[in-house]
Length: 71
Image 1 (cartoon, rainbow, N blue to C red):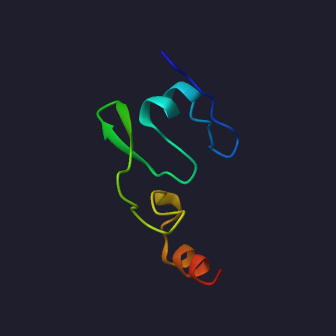
Image 2: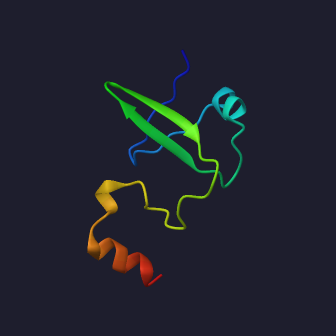
C-alpha cells in the first residue's frame, strides 16, 4: 500500500511510484472517481478545463467563478 499525507491546506504529493505508474508529468490533469468507499485516480487523456477550480465543489459558487474570471 502506498500512502501520502494531507497538509493543512488539503494538499498532498502524489508519490513517485504512482506518478510513474500513471505516467504523470507537470501540468497533467488527474481524474477521481468515487466508487463506494474508495476513490480511483486516473490520468486525464484530454484537457478537461482551463479553470484550476473545476473539480473543487467548495469553490464552485457563482462568486468564485466571477472572482476567478477577473484574474
